[in-house]
Image 1: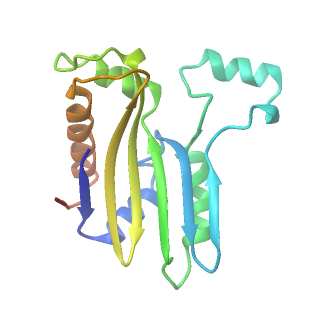
Image 2: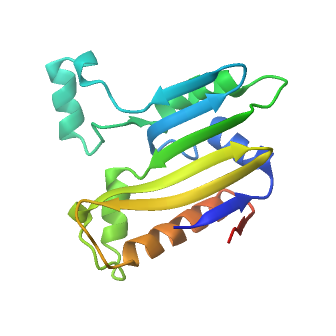
Length: 170
């Protein structure tokens, strides 16, 4: 688990809300506090879909548990945009199944992809600062930390590729 503070808040806000940079991530949750607190549960409601649509979701390599950030981003942007900054927000993103498989396929990884439940990126804005916190969950107890190390490296590289300056918090 890594905690990284983004040095320029505006840069990550633009990357998160005004670009497609995080669109390939799944959204477990978004909580935005402005004049009210808005909670978005990213879990897909399967009753909304007909059987054909559900089968299509299952047959594709896409998640049938959470919505993609690209589908929720416009709603979150509408809640945040304006002259006043939000009081706070939290977005909990998960790596898509394809990314989990890619990380598990790394020769340095000692854990099979079917043991990795989720690779998480929490993005929190509070008191004018944005913090990104990584995490992982497994389907069984795993002593090996190679997945955590690879996930932390991946997120650091991703933020760097997006041009976001950060520093590690202790």
